[in-house]
Length: 108
Image (cartoon, rainbow, N blue to C red; front, side, top):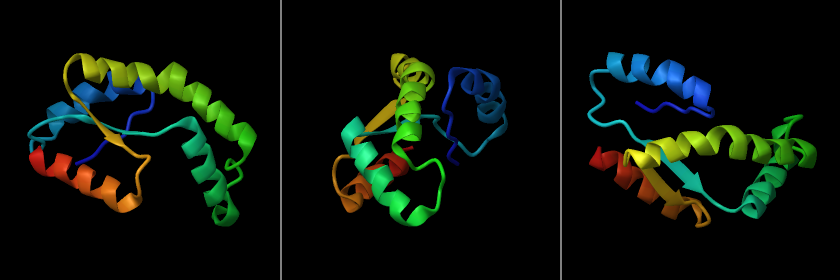
């Protein structure tokens, strides 16, 4: 079971309810796929060529980066403080990233 939280409020509201109600989860961790802003921007703009998403533009991307710093990063840091964060270098190609993510999930 995988849950994605992107801000502190969501984490505080749902973590206890979800983790407390999901009996099959043996361990709860946050999975951080980490890469540079330049890489993320490049990938999103590449996706924009075919996605049809109105928010795949440079202005929206810059807002996402700000949201990441102000809302998501504190969540990641709170999971790191309790040793519940696994970080994957997402600068690599998709096959390498997938293998590492799979390995992390298999260890849970």
